[in-house]
Amino acid sequence: MYSLSVEAERRKEPAVEVYLADYRMLNPPGEERRIYVFHLVITNTSLSANSIKRIELTLEYGQQGQPPSNVVIPHDSSAAIAGSKEAAEVIRVPCSIAAGATIAGAALFPIDTGLIGDGVVESHVVTVTDAHDRAVQRHAILLWEVES
Image (cartoon, rainbow, N blue to C red):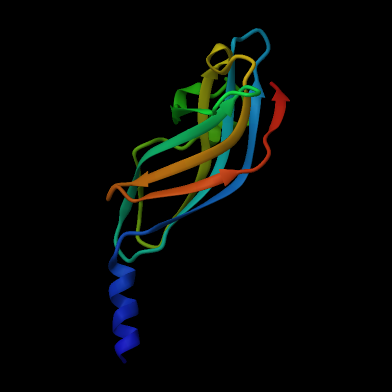
C-alpha cells in the first residue's frame, strides 16, 4: 500500500520524457546557413498538465589542436523552408502538454555557416525545458547532411 502511495505522489510531480525520432542538417542552396532539424517526441508522464517553455541545441565544436567551444542555438519555428516537410510539423514554443499526453514535431535550429567556420562539430545536445524549469537533454550521435 505504501509503495502505491509513493508511486501516486511521484506521478503528480511534473515530468517529461523526450525521444529523438530523427535528426539531420539541411543545407539550403544559395543560403549562408544550415538548419539543424530534430524530430522530437515529448511525453508528459505526470498526472498534471505541463508545457514546453524552451528548446535549445548546444553544439560543441573545435579545430585541430585547439580547445572546443560551445554555441547554444534556440529553436526557431520560423526557420522552416517553405513547402518542406518540417514547415507543417514544427513545434511551436511555448507548447502545452496535457497530463499523460504526447506531442511530436520538428525543432529547428538555424545557424550561419560563418559562426563555426571550418570547425568540426563534436557533439549535438538538444535540451527541452518544461514550465517547471526541468531540463531533459538528448545527445545526437550522427547527423545526415541533406541538400534542400
